[in-house]
View 1 (cartoon, rainbow, N blue to C red):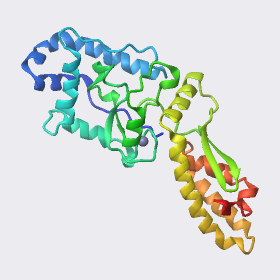
View 2 (cartoon, rainbow, N blue to C red; view 1 turned 60 degrees about the vertical axis):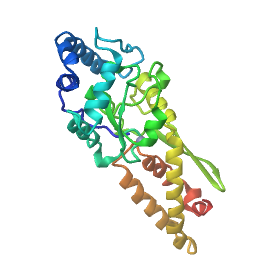
View 3 (cartoon, rainbow, N blue to C red; view 1 turned 30 degrees about the vertical axis):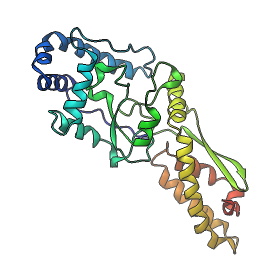
View 4 (cartoon, rainbow, N blue to C red; view 1 turned 90 degrees about the vertical axis):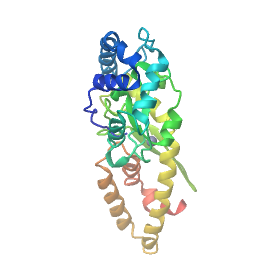
Length: 278
Ligand SMILES: [Zn+2]
């Protein structure tokens, strides 16, 4: 998972600009509605910082400002090319480092996701803190999941940062042919709530499937690389190459590469020819 700095965009300003551009009726409602929305945004930030949003209340309409009005602000003023806040939409989309999806760290960002689904948390339809760049695979897997239980939550790239710790385990299930899987691991010093979120994020986004298939491709490439050492039983060279991979992956302790090479570097069976079994 990749952490992203919180957007430096004034959320209330976005809300006001969207409503003003949307219609005279919504603009007229702003003096009554703005203080409520402002409170709601403060509550959102506080809930996210608490590591759990299980008890965060679902949205209700704000006086005459209905659910559809709030949703239309997003679709008309942020998503549409002609929208008054389209520039902010683009800026949020571009905030993912190297365009990588922060939820899986693998695929390319294609959209903005409402971290709390806008269908039920519509007061946050245009709240920049609730708009997170995401890839189409994670977006599809996350769709319609309500964060109303500890095992239904996702890491939030603006609030959670587990990039400095290893929270993945790599397991060899079978040696011939090689079968592997990844599991969520509890890093030291992580609270029960944070670990529940890690596990839920990992399983709901089906990260084992994604990481396993990418790891199999890499193991296949390594088989080719290591085959030249096989005739001479040159296991020292195999070990050296694996150590290089581990060193390179150490920059991202939470990556599947780091989990995998941590295990392979100490795996005599793999180093001494087991690599052929892929
Ligand atoms: Zn993704």
